Image (cartoon, rainbow over all chains, first blue to last red):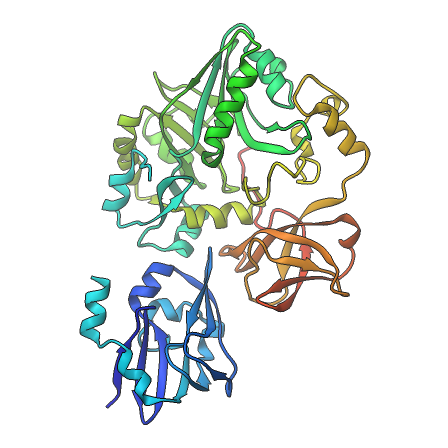
Length: 122
Length: 358
């Protein structure tokens, strides 16, 4: 059973067996509007918490997505290359951005659970 | 933050609002930018453009005053004819781009950009000071209905639009103004009315199945595909009409001199030849290239910059406008995006064909 976390930068993390799947929340995609391009990091890249390692581009603007925790990229969602709008239609499932090996599990404790995140966007 | 007369309607329609030129404006509605864009090209899109500025010039010297303010022959402009033109500064840089319609022998309507409102009003008053004219800034609701079905939608509401020519304007009733103009590359109309009548009229238009409300996001992607300039990005006080590729808007005889502000500089800038020019650019990859991105040649030399860029939903690839050194246009062009060099190809404008009623 995966544990789900949220950040105040409107990302979600689903953590299972030390691997976090990272995406932007449905609320975030609503704010951005239709996405036309997603720039993903390279598999194997080491990232620090707060790195701008993904760029999501709507028709009008490019926005950075910041790494919520430190780790190493183990996979990226290749489906977004041909269909960036997947982030709009399924932000918190098939529209995931990348998977990472969590460097320090204790960093997860500073993140929010669903209830806290719902309160943030309310 | 200022609100247009349609603010309540935007909220009711579920628009995502954002700041533009001091106004809270709809960026997109629940339909989304991609579908709003496509709907405008296929049917009819309704845009709130009430943030734009309407300035009426009236009086016996109205034609002379316009001829001083703008590089076109206002005296020979026909009543009902709408002209695309500019305010120039003394260096022939563009202060603003405008549409001016002659409403009568001694009446002209200037429609100017929201972002230039204060500057334009001050400029007009300064120029008008030396002429026997009255300057009136008219607060109005202002809507654009754009797309192939716009003509039928307005026709069904009783407006005699079928016979109107592209770039013409009329006053269908007291306090109203209607022109066959737009900013999307499609056939369409811009309609001004007293502020209090704007929301009702917008709802009447939206009641037609062919009409959807369209936000600023799609307004930008539509005009970009149509190769139309946006003031403050593609046009600035530093850029001349020649560099901007807009010399077509200035009659040949006036390019050699005229009574308008900036005439001497314009003649000089044309005879000296332009160093930079406006081009349409398309990235070879799928990465959108945005305004402000620097352009380089194959050796890494600075050759210009992107002035507008984004994604073109109808052409289904990123599109951009750039200002580049004339000497560099035959060589390789790369845009610097987040430290990566993306190859760009020059493409003829517009990216999407114009469908104006001719």
